[in-house]
Image (cartoon, rainbow, N blue to C red; front, top):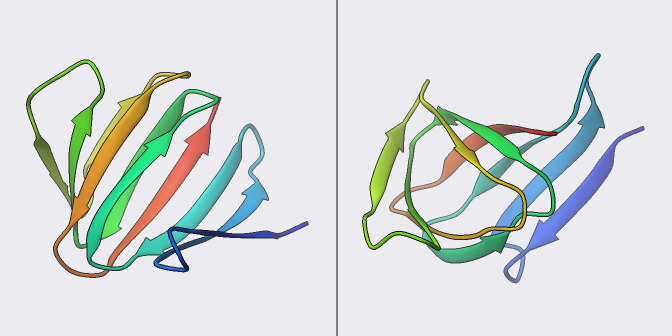
Length: 93
């Protein structure tokens, strides 16, 4: 079953589904600055574009480009800066 998700006034959209082992989403973020919170451990892979990330416990920003992966622990808040429309794949668990 597919689940459509929309965040930040429609500037971030994803489709949720179940992989063989974990729940996942595939989505797109328009250019902008966003803040997200995690309820589960997230592993995010950039498919196209780039995401600049700042974790709540850090002052540093890290940029992840197409093909690169980053992880965010459960119960965390992170900020994302997107310069141009960026697609991602994220698994939860």
